[in-house]
Image (tube, rainbow, N blue to C red; front, top):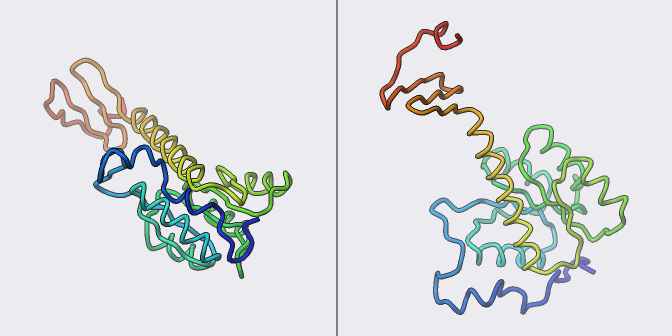
Length: 196
């Protein structure tokens, strides 16, 4: 069940969404100018390769590391859009990595574990994981969970951005930059005028 060196899905599942692949090269696949980055923290080589292959086939860029410490270093150097985090890691375990990430960021975290006990799932979610998937799992399910999590994150970010910008007919007010446009023309206001 996803133990050391075991694949977490069948080889035939590596071809994610085969119907889309019948459309031809590059058609039906996710294409992005700036690929979304998934940080994969997984110590089992076969699992790491399977997940990396499945996500890259769908257009994601994967940064894969094998320890919690490496994951935190990579997180400090790059800006991933999501973290896939194995619970059972050598050294710093996934729970501690999750705790440290959550202390600094609201980055989406999907915890991966061979433990399917309800208590383990609850602990992972209570520490800040946004989702929890148990081994063995299929590549299609994992890709669908990643896609859904990133979609929800994007919708939340868009909603937050809309709250920071007020729009009225002929008037735009951007709260973070404290700028105002009237009929498409910039309106120069003093800080006190803007506050009023």
